[in-house]
Image (cartoon, rainbow, N blue to C red; front, side, top):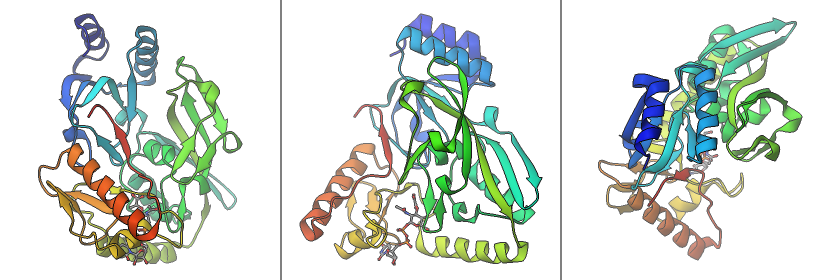
Length: 311
Ligand code: EPU
């Protein structure tokens, strides 16, 4: 719990942009999660820097979130500070030189806005991300992707804020992208924050890009339970020829439920919240899926979703 002086400090800095004991279920796509001691939405990078420096000095843990799409917040909620990067980092600029398009976008920009901009402008390279929910910063941190590509394919550089509040630009060579994961250089401190990313695209053929986009979106709607609360794919694919969805499906687990957490009958790598699922329900269902897939195929499924907070 945050002490009174800490709450006062945050209120003085942020006014109505900080809320205390805020149910995280209201801020995640899963619609699950206990209260955060404080949920803060800084209005600019000066406020963000002040908050980070204060939290480090006061030894108050802080967690950065974007759109809350790939997040499972435990039922006991989150101690300390949750910082949501949204509108404050929502600027997009672009420049075109010869056949090359460079976009600089804030971490709070919805990924779908970048996809729409590229599509509208006939820029090639972003269609892989169509339908990925959440913010650009979140997509970068987890190297979000689909069968067609991932963030690492289009990123040139990122700007980060270190735990000390310093802003640095990192080129792609300094970033360690892995499957659904980005590791920032260790020297930046334990909780460095991505503020901005630079994407490199190419001039393309608009009608062709639009046709591809229509196909991809239709495919996604057909295959995935996009209208139900979930955290997207719950497990990483153990290998590209071995998608987790197929393994879970072949293990006969579609429709299996713990409480209101259900293995989607549409796509087996989605756990959906059919009403009042708790994080404990989701975690128990996750364990059962892992155990059954292990028994059946001797393959370990590794969660893709980020689990935070106190059980
Ligand atoms: N499959 C089944 N049963 C199922 C689900 C899938 O047999 O219930 C089979 C499909 O028939 C297909 C194969 O598994 O042959 C792969 O399925 P799909 O094409 O749906 O792709 P995926 O590997 O399950 C990946 C990403 C998705 C992304 C799609 C679209 C991962 C873990 N998942 O899914 O990303 O939307 O490709 O390209 O990489 C996410 O990361 O949250 C996510 C949803």
